[in-house]
Amino acid sequence: MPSLLDKRLVFVTGKGGVGKTTVAAALGLAAARAGKRTIVCEVAEQERLAGMFGHGDTGYAEVELAERLWAISIDPQRAQEEYLRDQLPSRTLAGMLAGSSLFTYLSAATPGLRELLTVGKVWELAQLERRDRARTPYDLVIVDAPATGHGLGLLTAPRTFRDVARVGPIARQAGVIHTFLSDPKRTGVVAVALPEETPVAETIELRRRLREELDTEVDAVVVNGLYPERFSGAESERIASADGDVRPPALRAALRSALSEHRRARTQRTQLRRLRRAVGDVSTLPFIFEPELGVADLERLSRGLERRL
Image (cartoon, rainbow, N blue to C red; front, top):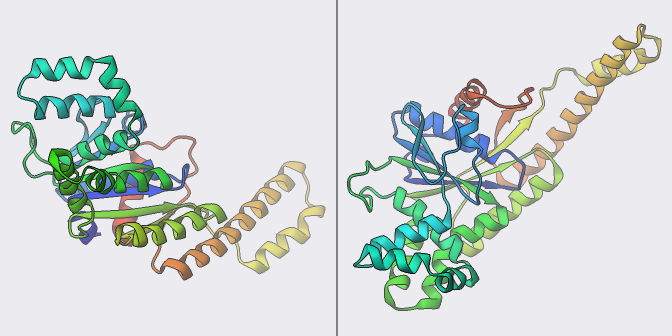
């Protein structure tokens, strides 16, 4: 955990629905507890984090959710307007360009530009000196990244624009961002999976593609939502054999539910062993039996990550 939290920027990615936002929030709480001024960035029009902390939507604003913990939802259009204001000599000219329907159309039609603008804003947040020097820099930026394929697109967009543009300010700035993202001392990647076949396969594939396409490694793999093992094999056999003789029906239903959970937990351990054979060390987080996670649940998970990472 110390080496991960000592980076400037950490991307949390994985298959959709595996709990990336939960892990990003837990990491953010752990970093804030360690004394680091931390911001968690949501992208792709996601705004789930603030609700977990009982706040309204953050929008394109840096909102403090807890002590030393902020959040922002990065909108590529707003990031583009901010970039134009910073790069052009006149705010009026920047406003005219940003408000131009032709410019907006061309921007939207340029492949990868939304990803570049998003990751450009993330990079700006991770700098020791912000574009607006009145703003306090962060010690750590955590990105609740899109699902694996789009997450890789976010990481590779600066290199793509650098190679296509070759010369000029866009090539130069994209190159600077790519250098930052590909530096393992400053940027890390956390892969999140569920202990299920497809998320495990996608995590193994993510590790391979990061090596091949970015020459970088996954810093940590976190398996989320692991069911507890409540019974031994012998105990589960006794429960199964007693099922037909049990009265009343409610108790029989409870036993069947317990057996179902036991079988699911065993299947999860099979997938967990498969993932560990492929990638080595894997940290786990327990399944939280709550319909919605709150701050207390996130605190519990963050302390679990502190012990395991």
